[in-house]
Image: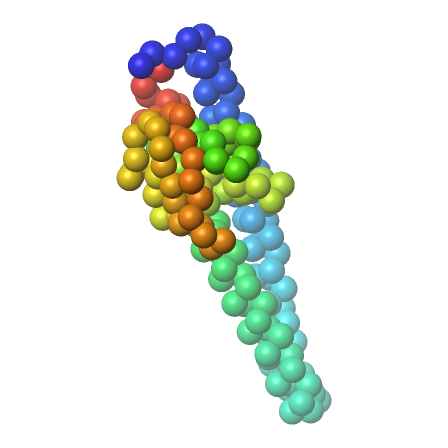
Length: 172
């Protein structure tokens, strides 16, 4: 189904906003990872150089803190890699869903990984419960299993995208 001019413009704006947010997050995470790697390296260097003057309790405490920081950074690096992977093609689907118990119509964009902005999902991971409706239902009655139980409602729209090199290659 072809889109009218307003829908086409809204889709283009949404894609541009999403790409800008991903770019912002990639940049921020990249800087943070770089700074933290330098801090961890410097900390380990200090521990090594001063190992004779640091007692064993301080040494263990320092090493545990360093290990926790390194594990935290590994999680950030995984997120960074996922964002790099989707920065040119952030999502491939969208559903509009209206819950039975709520008058709010939600636009749910589906991609390879979750992307948040201001603590709200702007892209849902394709493996998330809410994204299952994209695969399991057409327009009409739909439901998904959430941690709080089954959520029922109506799927109002189901759309697929082919985004390559930050551009929607479909004639929407």
